[in-house]
Image 1 (spheres, helix red, strand yellow):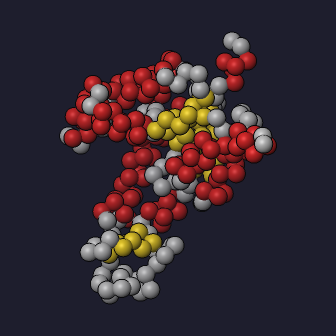
Image 2 (cartoon, rainbow, N blue to C red; image 1 turned 90 degrees about the horizontal axis):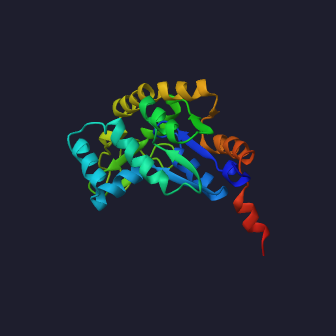
Image 3 (tube, rainbow, N blue to C red; image 1 turned 180 degrees about the vertical axis):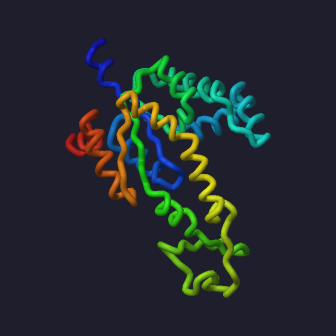
Length: 228
């Protein structure tokens, strides 16, 4: 194994919905030469193109079922074949232990970045959106609250919350995430590759993630800044 082979990083990022995973991933990609592979994007892409595996996945989604492990694994591994010469960051896969085991048979995962944001913080963040239905105006209790709670500034009509943003829906999603991924985190913890980064906001978590990744990969954004 030459130096080039050894320098490739195989990483996974995990974090509940609302943990800032998307923001952290995009910053990672900006600073480090990593390909970001989101299983959600990959699924949508395959369904839109009507690939064999996309059509198969869609049948499960249409029935409101979870996509089986073997289908998700096939999808991800097929895509990773094209990224063999790059370092990569997997996002949304593996979600279950069988998926993690299947991935392990083909690639050695070096690092699992786990974003640990308190559920209460996430709940506040995800349930703070209120909408004025007829105009589509969106308020956020934390960033741009209405002048009067629950009332649209312009029409004085009541604001509503989308089903997704209701506290009970958010709680359900967070519990489902935890139930599904607890075993995966445990699996990687036992392998000694789990790195947990804790904080209540992305600006607290990001510097920790950045400092950690700098020990593994060169920062390409600085290199660009230095070359004339």
